[in-house]
Length: 370
Image (tube, rainbow, N blue to C red; front, side):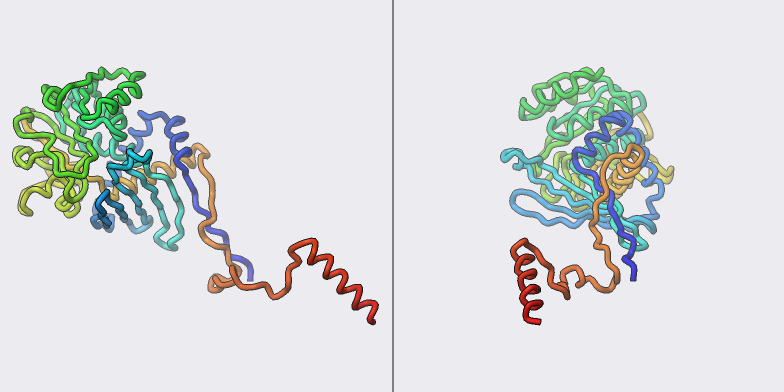
């Protein structure tokens, strides 16, 4: 029996993804990823969805985020450990897989740490396009850690934001952001407080990492017409917004069953009304109705966004010839005979010069005896 065709898997390392983004360009990468996300949200009902599976510990959380349609299954492994930076590790680390539903063959294995930062920023822009005031120009960015540059660039390139006001309790984080984005046309303004940063802002993004029930935004800071993009509150016991901020806004979510557990929405009763964003994108629900309305996107990150991001990375990598093929699946002459991979050989194999010489001596001895 001939061996079955070897099922090879496309592999993208962290360096592969960095190379891809460099070659495509940050603006084009964010724009194309946002297009993939919007395209998949528009076919929301094609997907088999569930809230992510989380394993919590004292220092953080490890999560699995699965989703599939009739053709492709995807999952992401991701952690969130805010104290990791103290030992030289990222707070968030991730990888993901795309697999063929018909056979189960993994078609893509990719890093998702850098990709998650890009897809989260692209998702923020997709939501803001639907919910923020047209011609918004000023963004307040509260939390200037690993995700912050991506948020700033997404709002700049995809929504036309011109000014970003920065605040972080760690001044070094703000300095890092100022250095990283010095090459852009953005006006970057460090601020001494949350209140100073949000005053007069069209859009406020909160993207903090501490696993605590924080109230970074309080009702007195909210101005008519603001769009609030709450990104950092993404697991039980980890929030950023005072409950009255949600009560005073029109609230939009990705996947309601998950956001009720993980988002800032966890503060409110189960009958508090929210709208899933896909309904707005498809024209089945209303987003912003007037300029003075306060809109709030309670973003926790949903598996469909990772599905979209993996699709984009796969397609872009194939276009550019980036990555490599790896053999995750064994090649078998008989698909039912997996044990053949470890079965002892029926014939002895000469593994060293000593054994080969001994074998020759044995043969000569037998010849003489004959």
